[in-house]
Structure formats: structure tokens, C-alpha cells
Amino acid sequence: MTDSLMIQDVDIQLKNIFDTFERVNSGKINGVGPWSMLYKESFLWDKFRIHSPRWMSYIYERSVLFPEIHTILQIIRPALEEAIEISAPPLIQEKLYELSRLALQLRIFDKTQDRENYIRIAVSLKCSPPTLRYYIEAIDAHAKFADYLLYGSPSPRTLERILNLVINISNCPKSGVKHLEKFQSICLDYTQPDNKEALEIIRRDEGQAVEFKACYQSSNTKRQYDKKSLSKQRITSVIAFLNTNDGNLFIGVDDDMSIHGIEDELKQYHSGSEDKFVMQLTSLFRDSIYTCTIDNPELKAIAKPKNLITIRLVLINGHTVAWVQVKQSKEHLFYYLESKSNYQFFVRTGRNKEKIKPENIESYLALKNGISV
View 1 (cartoon, rainbow, N blue to C red):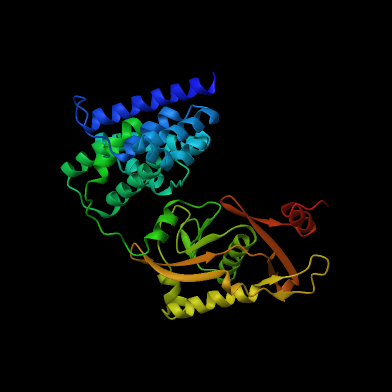
View 2 (cartoon, one colour):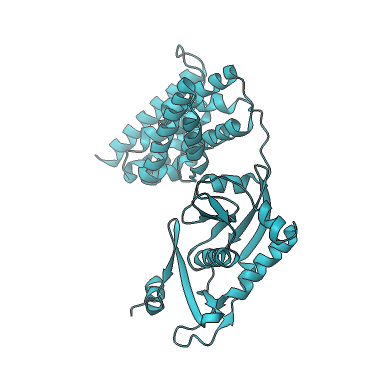
């Protein structure tokens, strides 16, 4: 097709869209109210996302003749120019479908498990530009409703009314926009708890950037405090984060995400003093984390990772939890066991930490840094 014919065809398409906008805005289409900007964004994205880059260059160029269309195209242009896997991520679409399904089950059966699954998925989803704005706002809406389920006190009638909207905030922008906007217009009455950020991280469960440690070790039904063993677990967990990626260690949380806090530990071993607990934990990390050279491990040096480790005691669900936030270190850090004159190297792999054997450390670091050995 010649350039002149392409321009002619593009102009026809843009004029048809303009006429549609005009009819909708003037109420001349029966049963259809004015389209919001979000709906128009989704409409144009769906209309043009299959066109070739060359064709789109004409669309952008000729759209200046239709100011409203031109303005919207500039907003969604990043999403149009990315692959659909980025502008409409399959994982996000899949999770939005799952959230709608769980919301429907919650409305019909009101099961605790459906509620918990809904909240877990809703608070864990994140996406950002160049994702189409509909998906970003749909995720925010589900997260807001999850907070409402957790912290609000809706009547059964109110809950059903809101669920009817949430169910229809779907993975399809064209069918979900109106329900999303109706949901956004509702004022949800609830008060977010203190330390909500920590609580949300805990709800996402253990993973590459999250680990839980109970204060006590369990042996069958008996809980016992082994200071030496627990201290080592805390040190190695932090070292694994330092050597791999930023992470969060929560002390006072069990593997099943139940929160029991550190109150007993504070009472029995720190005279009830939170300051003493923080000082002891700070000293523990300071005195046990070292740097050393692989070829001469005797040349050890205290790593002093104090700028990489932040210890906070936060109140969650009525319990005091130690929240250790760790930033990844630029140096490789080791756990030094002075009694054994031995260094141990740990990294994070998924939900677990992994100990690298001494004979494999050099190869691991070389592989990590992209160096041939």
C-alpha cells in the first residue's frame, strides 16, 4: 500500500473513532453513558495494539487532527509500543481472573479459605508502566478491597454490593473498566493498622526476599530456647541476604505465617527491655560477620555491615516482632566461627539459604561475577 493510501485509510479510522466519541459524549448511543478517560485509553489500546510500527507512525502523525484522540494516544503510547506481554502481562491477567473467581466464591459461600486466598493474591501483585493503566488500577482496587476485608467492618448487604463490582473487575479492560470505576467511587471505611508494610510483607510468605524465624525451636509439642543455635540461624539468614539480594528477616513469626512475637524472649533473657534485645542482636551481627580473601582466609576483617542492616521492633496483631531489613552488600561476607577458625559462606536460593562449601566458594563467586575459572 502506498503512503497516500495508508494516510487516507488512517484518516478514515481516526474519523470513525472521533465520530464514535462524539456520539457517546452526546448520549446519542442508547444505553451508553459518557466514556471515561480510562475507558477511552483501553478502547484505543485494544484498537491499535495489533498494528505495525510503520502503520502506528501514521496514526501518531495524523492524530493531531483529532486533539482528544491525540492526547490519549500520547498517554498510552508506551503501552502500545511494548510487547503485549508487557503492556498486558499474562501473569497479571491470570491473577485478575483468579481474584474475580475467588470474589465470586466469597460472595456465594463466604468461606474463610477463599477470603484468605483472595487477600494473599491481592496484596502480592505489583505492576508499573508501561503496563496499561487499567491493569495497574485494577490491581490497586483489589488490594484496597483486601484491606477492607481485613480492617473494615462491612455489613453483609454492603459487602455483597461491593463484591458484585469486584467480581467484574476482570482481566479484560473493555468489560472491566466500568465496574472498576464504580468501585473507585465508593468510600471504603476502614483504618489501616500500624506497621502495615511489615504485615503485607509477612502475608506474601517466605521467599527470595523474606524469611521467618521463631524465637523458640519446636521439638514435637515442646518449645525450647537454644540461644546458641538460634543466634546462628539469625546470623546465617542475614549473611545470605547480604550476599544475594535485599531481604527481610522477621523474628517472632512461624513458618506458617502465624505471629507470636518475641515477648517471652524479651521477658526471660532481656529483662523485658526492647533496647537490650536490639543491642544484643546488633552486637551479634557486628561480631560475627567478616570479610576475607579466598586465597588467604586468615586476613579477616570485621565487615561492619551496620549501614546494611536495620533492626526495628514493630507491633503486629498485638505482638512485638523484630523486623531486620537487609541491603545487599557489595562485598562478599562470611560467618566467622572463631572457636573453629572457620568461615562459612551463605547465599539465598528461593525460600531457603544455601551454604557454599569452602572448596566451591571461589568458583561460585567467579560464576556470579561472570568470570571464567
